Image (cartoon, rainbow, N blue to C red):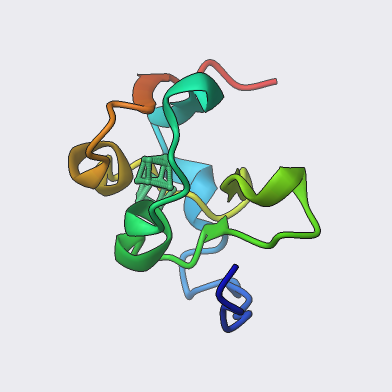
Length: 88
Ligand code: SF4
Ligand code: SF4
């Protein structure tokens, strides 16, 4: 597997982006081919992929995902579904 750069999101002036999210990604692992598109296009660095974590499948950062749906739009396998974020 290709080694990917590791970046970390930080709080912005409005706090953590997840604080104003209304929808969030639901990952459907059976459909995922680890193509990296969601990782590449997420504008908030809220997706990480590492061969050492989750068997190389994407991991979504619940603190910094802002629910923009870009990952779901770019996924060629429909492996990401946006669902209402009802909080914890
Ligand atoms: S919904 Fe937007 S911010 Fe959240 S993981 Fe997908 S692309 Fe990133
Ligand atoms: S874009 Fe879809 S298929 Fe590609 S790694 Fe992300 S979830 Fe998996």
